[in-house]
Image (cartoon, rainbow, N blue to C red; front, side, top):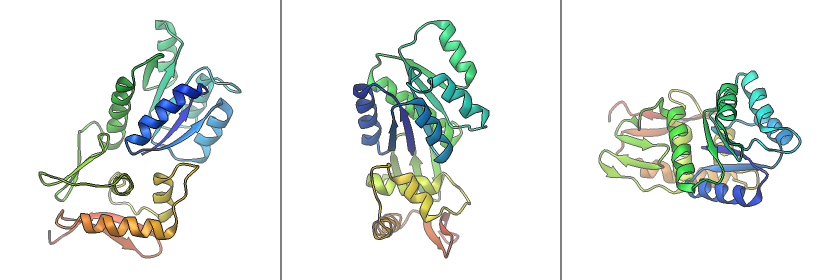
Length: 224
């Protein structure tokens, strides 16, 4: 999953980013509200972690603009602003969850998993294609009952494909899903990752099919 963290506190941002990247997510970090608003217009994200007290543009305004554009991505607000009226105000603006600083990382991680699970699997705990089972939020995979060991990049690939059922995913979309702004993924690197993923999916009843000139499709094999 690709996540935008809009947080101007360097220590909190570093901890949150490290936690998310350790879980296998691609993370972009923004320190002011105006830049966050621009990033949300220009890039597709699966989750926004939003501080309210941002310079240049308040987090509340970032949230309001996001919802006025009709964007439905989940938003987890992390803020020092307490009080029932403030929580109600922000939730009414369109936030999906609200976490008051300081917070424990384990609670933050649990809330992120819940929001991503709701977004990718409509609240169900797993996705299944053929014998391949995926816990997107928990970054776990199985073939039948046997655990499937995937690298972070391999899981990112199968996640990007599995969360777009019956839709072709372009190479550009795969790169977008896998990379932070400060990372690069060459064509050769993507091809190697796809080759290794296909090899590991052997026996799962699924296949990554190349749609020439368009991209890739994760599909259940008819003779599986």
